[in-house]
Image (cartoon, rainbow, N blue to C red; front, side):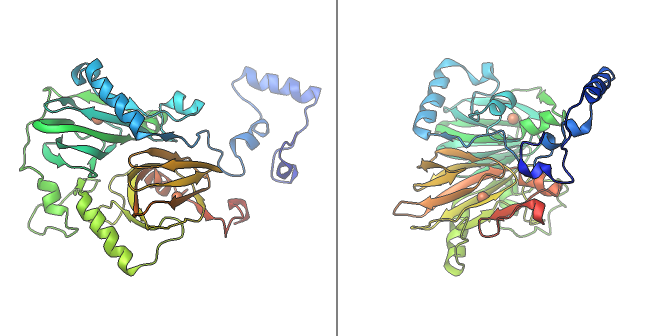
Length: 370
Ligand SMILES: [Fe+2]
Ligand SMILES: [Fe+2]
């Protein structure tokens, strides 16, 4: 029986049970089958039906918990001493997801600590929230990490992290596509034969070679499927946002937004996850839009609120919140300064599949009417 009035129309399943049909269904079940029309409307909804909920993690609470973990377990014992951000939903707990296909966690490391070297088919990227002297080594490239830098650990690359002995307590947010790798049943994990890699190249060789957005002609060709920049420095990103804002109107939905792109292609920095940094000017009141794909935000500066699926979430620096797929959302800056939102997403997957769809309130009408 149709539960949605739209399901009464031709083209949707609307079959009433009869004793003959029920007997038929039993027979199908006996041979690992079912009548498609029994499931069609549920598995092909009129529009995406997310199983995830908008959720917010307050930095003052999460920071304290991350620091307490330092005294409770060593990074060597934990493998990765990460506090996992679990979406406030059954699906989040089931899939260890922050939202949709995305995993996220927070990691605090004190000076002198290391995370042992390993690799996995899940891609990873990190946003540094605080500290000094932190570094990562990715396939032999040693990269230093400062506050609000964004760094890549693409799938299959050996990586280890640490904080120099004379550094400061450092905290960063990890983003990975672990739920996607698991649903595709393509997740591998391996540990390196030493606790840490030895750097094979001069420190920061990749960002220093590619970070200006110009192609080095006298260096060998880059043949990897990810951005050679590897780390995007906050000062450069903030400067680029402000220059852009001088000569462009703010987008009604996202203010001024930049993509952390692969300068050789203009595409996303990695194949499965993308990231953006946006600035909401003082007084910005965004209009609502929605899109397929999941987005996890980290407030890099300023204060304001977002309305997500009709629910208001007030945020301040380093609070983390998520917008599940196809949920209406709008952002508002309530502070006296520009607000900065770092975010990461699964848009590259949506684009590869040809399913990245966006809608604004003005054009709302639904995919089924296209
Ligand atoms: Fe890792
Ligand atoms: Fe959006």
